[in-house]
Picture 1 (spheres, rainbow, N blue to C red):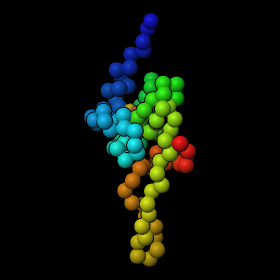
Picture 2: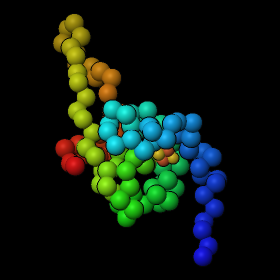
Picture 3: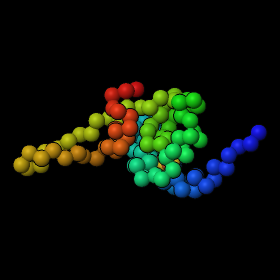
Picture 4: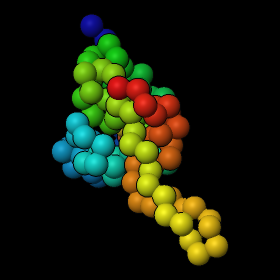
Amino acid sequence: MHLPDSSSWQAAAACAGLSPSVVFARRSQQAAPALRACAVCLVQRECEAAVAPAESWFDGVCAGRLWRNGRPVAAKRRATTRRPGGTAVASAGTSARATEITGGGRG
Ligand code: SF4
């Protein structure tokens, strides 16, 4: 059986320096650093192809999403605060990219 050489894309993974407890987190709050890494990661496609989260019933972060039992976990809505003058601004929370990708509300 031939396994593809995954070392090249793994070396470019933006999450490479993060703790496994972050990358394989089951909750959005713990996964937030990995989701932020995904937002700037250049190897998202390779990551998703290698992990195949839906087929592998993956738990953790892959390709900009948090997965649990192979299903994307919906990102929590970001809290907003009002600036003086009425402009709403997002506060710290799950990345907008994760919200965009998951579509919010599913899972
Ligand atoms: S897409 Fe996310 S989980 Fe996959 S290698 Fe990049 S940073 Fe890591």
